[in-house]
Length: 94
Image (cartoon, rainbow, N blue to C red; front, side):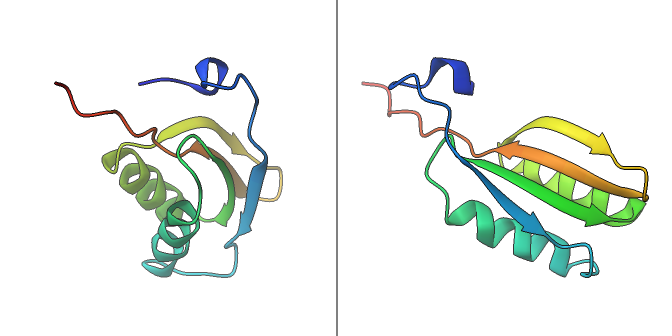
């Protein structure tokens, strides 16, 4: 899997912000998934969420889909910010 430092055009993509601190499971992952679906491969999404259960569920689900969590930061107010890189499309092998 490539990371943002080896993207083809050598540019760091803009980060899309998603605040789901007011959402409860399973909507936390639904909103995260929809935001990821709207990104180009290699795009970055910063998800601001509240609570241990949403943090655990979103983290596990994002990884299960093959995306990369670049940062997982706990905030002083008890929220978390996950910075996710959408998985890159790998060309089919010949």
